[in-house]
Length: 130
Image 1 (cartoon, rainbow, N blue to C red):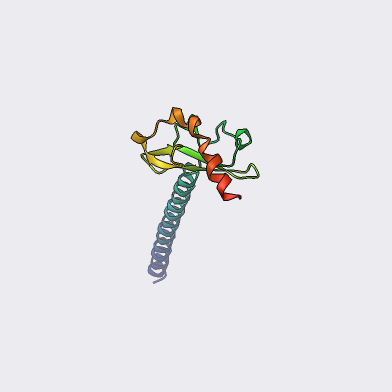
Image 2: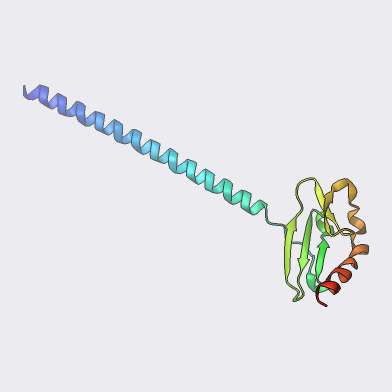
């Protein structure tokens, strides 16, 4: 009898041990999945921030909206009256059209000509602060 109760207790202990190992493995998988998801979210958030370029609002005469030539006009900057700078990406397949101060289909934008239209900001901001 003693031997059979010992065998039963040993079998129960083995079942509990296997269950604990399975439970730990599931926990590890869940932690790994959560970590992967956190990393993907972090990557997506980082990829939505415009890159730092040489563009500086301090170099602009007027506050306003400015295409970033270095980024082929996929990025534009809003320069505030206090020389603050906020940068944005245009939506996919669009570029900042300096002539119209908005994102436009890429084929409608001649990015290299953007500096020739920077003066449009003087008209817009002049009316805003009268």
